[in-house]
Length: 140
Image 1 (tube, helix red, strand yellow):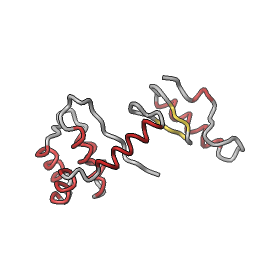
Image 2 (cartoon, rainbow, N blue to C red):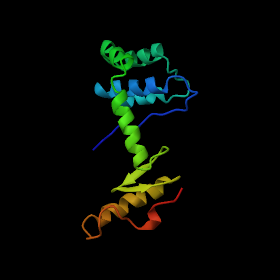
Image 3 (tube, helix red, strand yellow):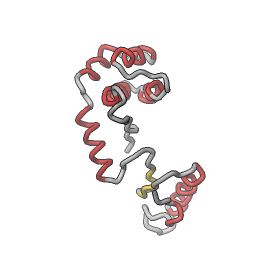
Image 4 (cartoon, rainbow, N blue to C red):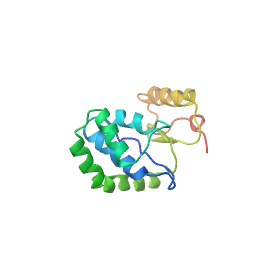
């Protein structure tokens, strides 16, 4: 199952919830990654006018976009996603899961690739899924 990354920000940053709504509204029109790239630029503003400008830039149906963002159309689902993440120990990003195993802490690319290789190698080995060797997961 694919779920889009959760976009979060500290409470003192203006508009993180609205930016998350914007990302979800863009996803509903098949443009999540294009919006994601715009939202995460250092110079990005998160006010509604800026978000609408980003929507126009990536050719979204702006009427639909504005309606969904201003009505908080995705708020309940985003709140459920956050609660589910907390229940599963996701208290920060990035957080990686490989074959059901959570990999905590800073994980260099090679460490992530090793975890994937181990999981792929175990696929037909009779080793229970979700249990790569402990050396692939790094404690926080």
